[in-house]
Length: 259
Image (tube, rainbow, N blue to C red; front, side):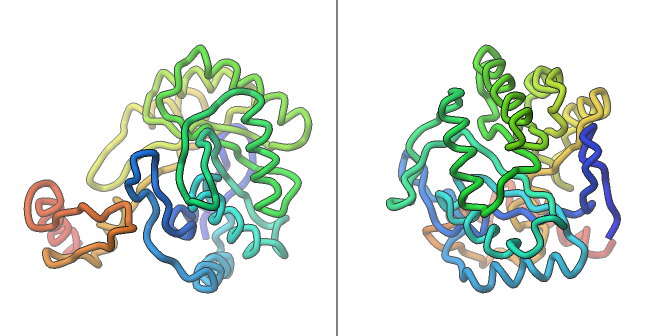
């Protein structure tokens, strides 16, 4: 496995990371729409994480809201005997009801950040988080200042090693980069969709670029065709493979297979 430095933190990570949104299982947003990836088998999720470890993956990215806490819980179980060998990234900013599996609202207040951090530490079964990321991509910059200061305080207290922002907005990324312990920005990019502006910010500020959606939510795996349908509790349930953008991308994927 090739490795990378996690931006200016100097933390070494595997060049390939394992995204843990899917292992959270089904959950729903404020409007009642599915935002999980359907029903999952927890034992299978743990086997997948441990197989990743065997193959050299050391970077695991999740969020407290994935499965309304379930993803962090499963990740913590899978990594409990290997904590010193891995780098865990998680996110905050979404308030949720774990019993109903519903997202309730956004909150990036200092008090909520501290409470969310403690909850993530408990679910992950650890006493520190390697990379803590703001999950609200369009948060107002005035609020972001207080967020950044709170994260710096949590670094000083030993709860975090570094922090970042999951956003596709270059100006927001630049603002966070002014924080001494900001080391990464997570943004959307894959073979279908470039993101040159965010790459430029990373290069400008020596930030790690964590690619969100590298497989285009599974489309680039090649497992789908025009007859494919996804379950009602899957965030992709309304995908239509017979026309529009997805049909066009299936055709382009056919050309990629030859390469």
